[in-house]
Amino acid sequence: MTDGVLSGCADKYQLRERIRFETEVEELTYDERAKHWTVRVRTQDGRREILDANAVISAVGQLNRPRFPEIPGRERFTGIAFHSACWQHQHDLRGKRIAVIGTGASAFQFVPVIAEQAAELVIFQRTPPWVVPNPNYQAEIPAGKHWLLNHVPYYAKWFRFWMFWRTAEGLLAIVKVDPEWTDQERSVSAANDMLRTILTENLTVMVGNDPELLAKCTPHYPPAGKRMLIDSGTWLRALRRPNVRLVTDPISEITPRGVRTASGAEYDADVIIYGTGFHANRFLFPMKVTGRNGVDLQARWAGDPRAYLGITIPGFPNLFCLYGTNTNIVVNGSIAFFSECEVRYIIGCIKLLLEKGRAAIDCKQDVHDAYNARIDAGNAAMAWGTPKVTSWYKNSKGRVTQNWPFTLLEFWSLTRNPNPADFVFS
Image 1 (tube, rainbow, N blue to C red):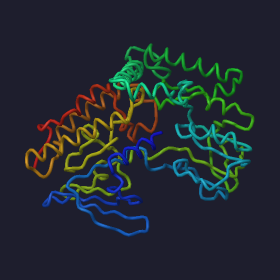
Image 2: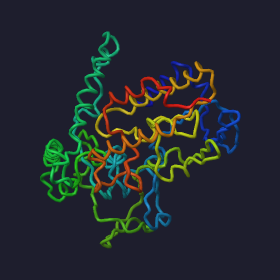
Image 3: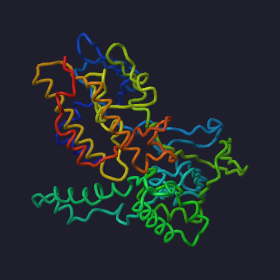
Image 4: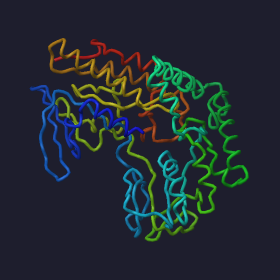
């Protein structure tokens, strides 16, 4: 559905002629004297080209570079192996013995499908996710609803407001830490504990007649400590199929024939699919970005990426990010909504440059620092920021680099118009 919407937008606004397909940006370098960016790109056939840009907008986001686990022996496997984000469609999986490593959002999407094709499917799980039931999650939108959204004046705006207020701002309080709550490892507040009870009851209804599977599927951390996953029932039904096994014994190595676990058990496989996520904390990776005074962005961040509003970075004028640092949302909203806010803000910044007759806009360091201090304090007060919870939301230092801890309304307000006082113009 998303691909269709994006393609339709490209057609409607005649954008395809302005898109360079199969072209990768390798390096961005800011020219202080000319006040523009030099952009080195490489085409699919290896040809390199240099482009000049007054401004650069990075829309690569957070989840774009697949991450393979550091498991010994991966290169020794003699069968078919690939990451789910780089699916190798040429392989027929019917009748195969398949090993899936990972039980995150990616596995939720593809496991129910390949479970129907595989002779045997073994899923290796490190940590179970909290599963939020939604029987209509994958259902077709009724024709009548389409008609209402497209033809009744203001209905689409009202529907969006109602949906956001009910399931976005309304859920945020449930995952906020109550400092007086005693058992912070199980839940972070009375409301959060109630959510835990509801989600556990759903798991019990779905797999309660299999105590071993129920134990494997029940998380031991607070709801929203890690990414919660929506299930229409297909995931939990797939786990109950006779040809599917869920293994929680840690993997010790990949062998030429399959997977070996810490207990010494061996699982032969024809195919290994890695549903192991992305290099979420490596923003703008693997591009090399050099700002003012020859400062390398990755060296400056040193594994702890930060930006003002997730959009601008001091010392890197006219560089803007979409879905940047601390703009991911856990329970309260839509990445598309955040992108809309960010695009409006970026256009506002470029408008300021034109109005002032200036060439460059650069975020002030003290503005950036004060903002990030507030973000850190906000994330520390949420379930995903509690010290004993580990996830891809955090970097190696334990800091939450991904998530926005406040309301959608506040992000909308902060990004509605850029404040000229936040910037240095040149």
